[in-house]
Image (cartoon, rainbow, N blue to C red; front, side, top):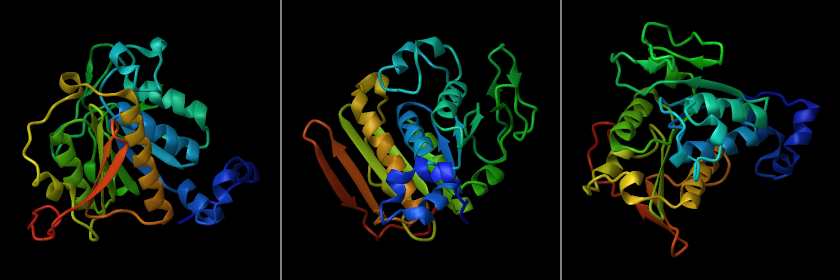
Length: 281
């Protein structure tokens, strides 16, 4: 399904449209696309900025965190005046300034397994646990219990921009359960990695996870070089746009890694001998 572009939009996105691999058809596919972006930290900031500016029709942001001083070096949607605000509220406001044609939806909550109540934090100090996810407050931020089936089935692709394996495992499971492509990214120190999973076509993130048993480190513990997280987040946007517009070759069953100190990209092919309960590969 494609969304016809206005003359103004054709002019705006002209530099992409003139690319023969994109053309009007590709830009209209992008305009009709609905992206679910989970985690509005460094990866999410970079990915959302690129997707919004490039002409994606709708972006749904999910996060329950607030903007802090320590976020500002790498989370470029935020500024000092937004410290203390919810990340989805701050990001929604900035993205709306970048591209008013893009429908930005903010959900202030953490993703939970099916049948687990969602509690989104009201910054007045009162938890909001009883409102349906289709309702919004005056800022346009949804505060609610989230229906995972509705949330995932209403989007064309998911970007996992979270920073912990528990969330990544849950997102992977929900993507395969509801048949939605997944673009996963991670960054720490001077290193980044990306993984694309397409239900029914490829192995999943759980297959990748089974190959690694190293203890999980956070950016707080190990550190993160600001440009690295922006490179990886922007690359997530690139891969997502390729999937949505059906452009070029997308690496499936492959882990992409980036070494920022040596400026090296490498590709690691997953073995196809594993049995996975999530993707049945």
